[in-house]
Image (tube, rainbow, N blue to C red; front, side, top):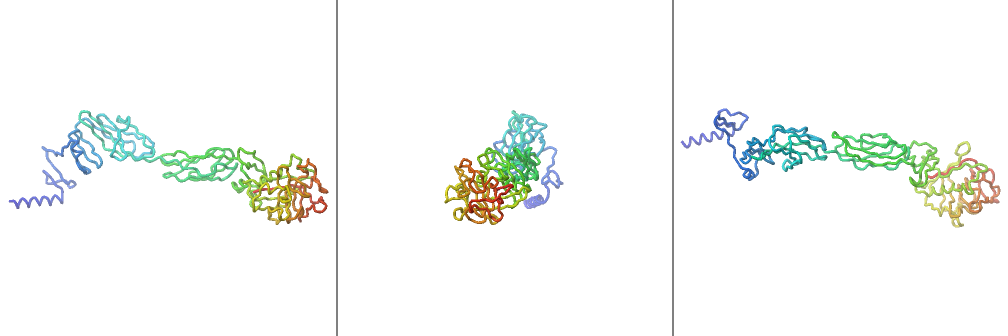
Length: 496
């Protein structure tokens, strides 16, 4: 008999491991592990109090019990116990959400139907630790999602004061974070009037699909709208350049830079800003906004790659007088601008005849520092005439000639010797005292001698600008100047 029982028992166990098991049925459903049938009895699960339930060590996901305290079935979802089938009146109802993926900062509408009891909506970021949402105690609640996430879990708690609390299953809402504002804009805050193609850019914003740029009314976007880099064409005025990053949720907070379109500091700045700029009259402001007033100058935009700023210009006639005293500042600017840090170290001299033709043009670069002292002569040791070691700062021009300029000091003393005192711009063929001059420009009157005239023989206002192609201008022979050395036309002295 015992052997027969063991045979039947092991047979049933073997069958249970390979197919569905039925209680009160010989044909359990193939999809079930265990099927029970009865019309007079039910299935009785373990009945535990809340304290006993909490004492379960490492409950398995899906573990099912009946809680005798709250009179509800409870299932462990992996992180917390969910209640259902409660006998008491607490019912969270059937939840519905307006969306399960939403943009940060947007509105989420949460509803329930079939609910009963005192309601409280709750939120969690880990589906484990829950927090009551303030003022969320009705069947419908509108929740503002956090702008930058993280994802949110929501559930509804229902309380029946007579028998306990019931919780809905949690629902995940994926939060698409708002885009961060772009970082700092790279680009100049001070540009030239009418400057073209000025570049501005930002680093890419993670998650952004496009970018929106705005510029002042006085400017236009030439290219790049929608990307991380644009080029802007300016006219005049000032204002903000702003940019936002965009995605399907909208636009980020803006980033901006304030830009002023003022006068350029030099012709070279104009040329660099607009390589197609042509020669002509331009307004520049060498010392920038708030300093001296802007000035109108001629810009040579073609000779030797262009960008030359006119420091001195005058038209010589037979009787013009550039000195004594109203007009004696024309060389002041030549010296000041030669010293200016914005002008670089290049100079150019041009003579233009009355027909507008350039008959002489020479350019060069100084190879050492010029100061007001070494451009001023107050004694023989620093005389500005180009005589060997007495002037070590001459510039060699691309014509093969040598250039010197006599600057100012407190008494306007300039080139000494037979030239007298004052300001002198000079181009000559070789280092020699008061001779071999190709171009000489200086004042007819002596500013520091009561405006008396110079003592050269045959010298008159027409000699304030002289030219000799072969370098034949000299005062060594009886300090006489010939009428053929006068040049009637325009002198232009440029810096770059």
